[in-house]
Image (cartoon, rainbow, N blue to C red; front, side, top):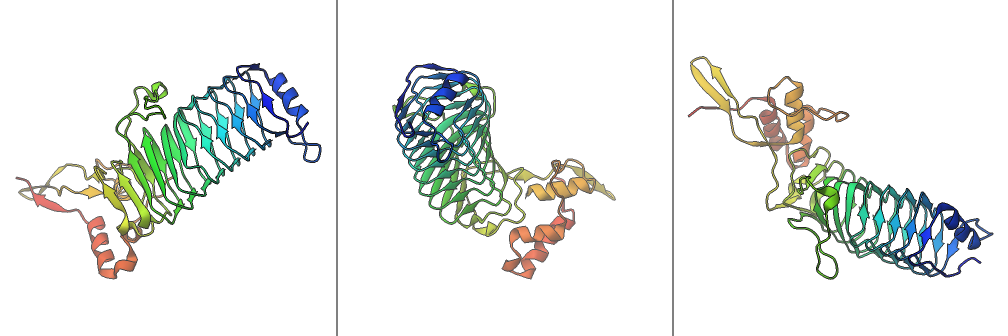
Length: 341
């Protein structure tokens, strides 16, 4: 009956068996499964797994469970704590539009492909991860209702339009992060972690899914975000798109946060040998100069608009005064030379 407790720890569960279990607790009023305290610790779900639209009114425990196919938790409501500690997802895992009312525990969880948390609500989650993902972790459109620490080792972390309603700390490895249009009105820090994550017992969380990859962290975009409360530490900004970022002058950088260098080239002007002045550049300047035929500059990725020098002026804040903008445009539109030594 709806709301019944289930205990299938260590059980091999096929698609057919799961369907029977969910049918037994289906709410006739909504047509969706309604489960009470549920224990699937150590269970193996073969084939596709779908809890889509279900409501867990009690604790949902999937510790050390294995999902061999697509794992679907789209639209699921977890009314209490949800435990996926050390769970293994060998295919994509979908938590799209899910609601975690209590804790969402993914300590040492492993995603062999992609983890989708798009438009998911984390109402009281204080720690997400550390989790390991061979593909991308998609948090775009997700909402975090309270203070949270997010620990992720993945190739890509999507945070487009993600909303943090309180302080947040992102501790990352391997990831390229997209923060386009992200909303954070409280301090948000993104720190590249130099060493592997540890679990609650202090042991290292294995990262074999990402073996051979660069453990460094890169920021792909800050477009549309308000950087007034943002702290970046030891992250790579060489390819970061910054046009449209609000309060970029208040962005706080700590540690090593490299920007793209201008290419090192020698030129001849009459009898004098000249070279580019050594300086750091924004990704958007790199794209513009490459589009103008410059050698050694990085071209814009497919789908990224190439901005003009006048448009780039806004990156440094037109509200800071016309003189500052004119100075920036002057730098962008003219080659800067110094005599070769």
